[in-house]
Amino acid sequence: MRANGNRRRDAIRAGLLIVLASAAFSAVGCGPVWYLDPDFGERLAAEKNKPMLIYFKVWDSSLHRNMKLEVLENSAVKRELVDMVNVELEFAYFAEQRQKYGVQRPQVCVVCNSRGERVSTPISVNPVPSVEVFVEWLRKAKAEALGVSTQPAS
Image (cartoon, rainbow, N blue to C red; front, side, top):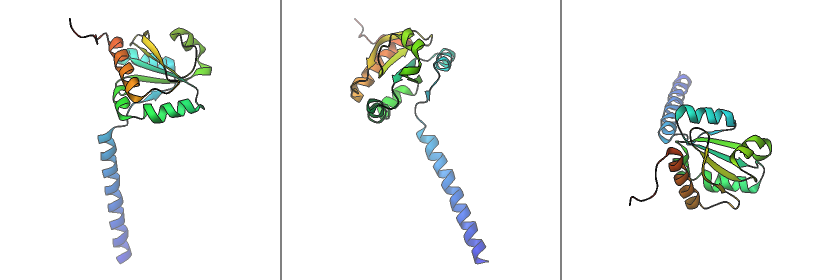
């Protein structure tokens, strides 16, 4: 009889932990989503009328690893990326997109408007930029993609 009571109490505790963990994750959010298909990214950006970030990377490089860990995982950067369509492309396999956006080397980020047209100047992330530099570039590029002026009123 006592063993059944312990099992029941353990099951209730486990259930409560699952509910609490689910609530915590939904409150925090998952952050930005990254897609690996550029055509899907373009369709989604057009459908949702959002700017699109394309990150041309080399998956096995220390530069890519450092960019992910030091910049893209930063909370300020994540806040900027969460309202964009983010596409991560392996540089070697997407010659058509490289040509379309004028990217000639890996470790480059490009921002496009919702029509898939490049805006602003791409940023090289080789060497890995500081979070502040990347956020500033990203904010300006997003504003341009949305057609919003970042210049002070005269």
